[in-house]
Each structure stands twice: as structure tokens, then as C-alpha cells.
Length: 233
View (cartoon, rainbow, N blue to C red):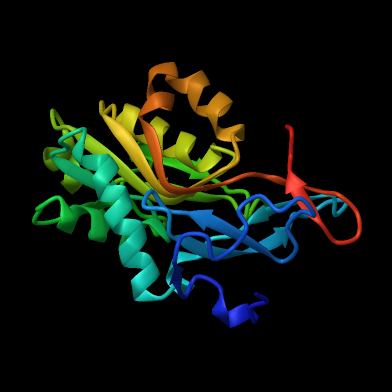
């Protein structure tokens, strides 16, 4: 079922709509599977470099509300096991998901990290951050010092859209540790590959098992003739 570019991330398809492991490889579409078996069609994006690697992309602010709700439902189901007191949202694409998860947990609010420095912010509560989608555009991640009373001594859950290389999440963890906060868990819309496990494990090995995703996708290697297959490393 070929999709036009604007049709990705718009529909939650019934279980089995797409072949989840085609012998001939994936083309321009990767079907990510929700815990209930339903599928979301993600576009295959070739990574910068020699063109031999790709990922299945998930851009939440381009998704339909139906897809966003399905992701938030699955994320909240993972989060409930940790009984968090407060949800932290990671900008930018993690913020609507953090709202959705916090609402489903019955919280009155969530706490948003920021990448735009306000005059009352402190550099002491900031960390440099980059990501796989914007490797050359490093920015700083800030925690509003006025939010500290909401977080200190509480069971904190981190919510973001995608974890891939792990560098963005590592910046979040370093920032929170500076503030004396160790999250009980982290929940993502998508776990993209496994490279993040070593990066997060180097910071806190125990946290790796407490990271969950609504959906997952492998890193992809070019197999010739326009086909893509899950990468071995």
C-alpha cells in the first residue's frame, strides 16, 4: 500500500495491514506496531552520510490526533507501573506527548524543559543537547528553577518523542542529576534502534530496563535495489 508523503503518521491501521517483516525488505514505509497489534505507517528516511543507513521517522507534530492519542495511551500504560508523581516533557516534540500522558495519569499539570533561555533561568541548570535528526544544531536544554519544588523528592517520569542515539536523553539525565533528580522511568513514543542502550547505560545502567516505548523501529541498512533491512549493528 504506497502512501503519499502527507499520509504518513495519519492513521492507526488494523493489525496485519502491513507485512511487519517482508522477505524482500522495506521500501519507503516501515509499519510500527502498537502493543495492541495495530500499526502506524512510518516513512523510511536515509541518514546523512554514504546513503547506506536509514531510520523509520516519527514526527509527532505532523501526526493526526488519532495517532497522537494512540501513542499517548500506550505510553501512559507503561507509565502507570511506576506511579509517577510528576511528568517531565522534553522539547520540542515530547511536550504534547507529556501533556497527553500526564492527563491520562490524572495529573493536573506536567513540567516542561525548555530550549529558549528566559532571563530568570540559570546556566547552572542547563545542558548542551543535540539529536540524530539535528546533529549539527546543538542547543541548550534548561530547567526552570521555579519548577524545582515540583520535582525534588518526587517520583519523576521523563517523556519524549523518540530515543535513538541516546544523546538527547543523556542531556536530560545530566540536567536532572544536577538538580538532584533521578527519574523513576522514561517513556517514549518510539524506541529507534538500540544504540541508545549503551549511552544511557553508561550514565545509569539500572535505568535502561525502565525505558519504554509505545512503538519501536530498527535502524535500517541498504540491501540493494531500494530495499532496507534491519541493521545488525
